[in-house]
Each structure stands twice: as structure tokens, then as C-alpha cells.
Length: 125
Image (cartoon, rainbow, N blue to C red):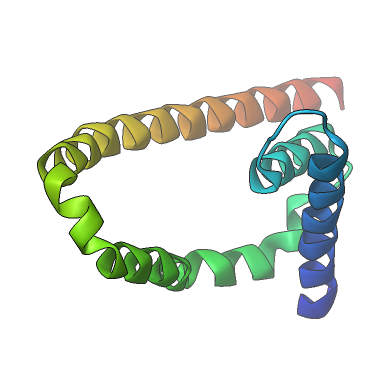
């Protein structure tokens, strides 16, 4: 699949998630809906990882660019954040290891599930 087609697929999922977020009766971030939708599509096999491999590798390699607008916003609002700087930094340092651990456990679980499915597939073949 070409990179343009891979991007179109990812942007299509983002567009669908925006539509879902717009029709939901409660406020829910479209980005989270998009991640859930992509996860479901990948787990069900509707979308194969090979269909989005190149674009996801590119996005992962350039992920730092995604955080630039957030960092600039924090720097612009520093005067408002200053009284809360210590709790803010403490929360960042406390939650970062939790996010890493949960992510690592999730990846390990998914890898174990994939290995289990491969073994079952080899037995059934």
C-alpha cells in the first residue's frame, strides 16, 4: 500500500471519529474515539498492520513534533501556571512511570496474545 493510501486510511479513521464525537450526546474526545476505533479494526483484522506500517513508523519516528504546540502553549501561559508549578511537576513525575508501566504491560500482553494466536494457528494448519 502506498504512503498516501496509508495516510488516507488513518485520516479517514480520524474523520469518522470526529463524526462519532459530533453525534454523541456527551462530550468525548474524537482522538480517543479514533484510537479505540483503530484498535478495534486492528484487533478484528479488518485493517492489517501491513496496511499502515510505513505511515505509523514515520509518525512514531517524528513524534516529538506533535508535542511542540503543547510546549509552546505551556510556555505562553507560564504566569498562570507558576503558582501550581510544584504540584504540576510532581504530577508529571509521578504519572510518567505509571504510563510507561501500563504501556509496557499492554505491549507485553498483546505480544503474548499474538504469540498464542500464532501457535494456535500453526496447530490448526
